Image (tube, rainbow, N blue to C red; front, top):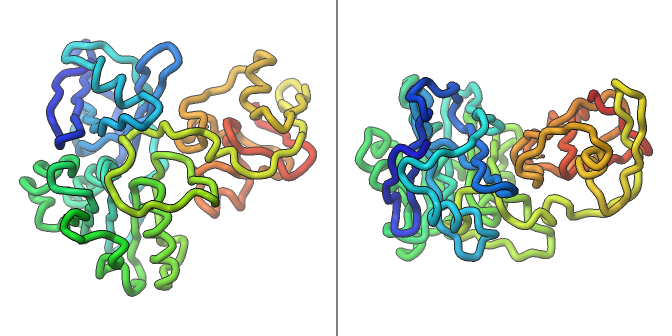
Length: 335
Ligand code: FES
């Protein structure tokens, strides 16, 4: 149930969600997100931005994006205090890892999971610094909360309307790779692409760079936009980004029944299985939430998601059936 709503910036609102019966909510790790069901076929994922130590509430922050597909507009328009909502338990594909130092880099509304991670790191006395890139102070989501808390001492805020953008250069902590340091990047697609590319060029090992995307990676032809402030905090961009690439037919076989299904070039595995009455779990259908990760028992996946790490992709033992495909003629799925 929506317990309180507050302004988080000139364009963003924070929504505090509590159980309708006042009971406990499932615990979550820093970096986690939930599905929010906004209508019969309108499900969006939002990162939790409060401290994981808070047991009785979830806090999400949503920037209104009039150019988006409508999730944030619907949410800003329809969510009122007292409204009951259907949500999923928290899922986390952006966890904190063991490291001696942590560098958190957020662009715009990408601050949401990063703020929760900073809260968790501060609570355990870990060493970290947080950089938040925004278009302006007025549009910086959760700026007041960041600066009025103890986290403010570890945070550096950058506003592009003052000429302080990530295009002008990476934060000092990223300019030279450091051992035993983990870097976390979350924000609009162009922002993330730029930060990761620059950090990689500076010599950071890919295994040190951890990312959380709010939308599938744009197709290669799309112009990267590295200014922060885009996006609305949900994961609702056109799914074509996740499906970009050459598609070919292949077969998926269900291990429990032995039945095989042909997946044409213009259908996803999930679409084919659902059409044949096979129950699958779906949420974002863009390869960015991990709800549909399915065991692969044989065959070689063609990964097109943004959820799995390079090591997980290389292992090839799970596949996001909403967008990924097959390099081998057949995949045997653990369903
Ligand atoms: S449904 Fe979200 S990754 Fe497949």
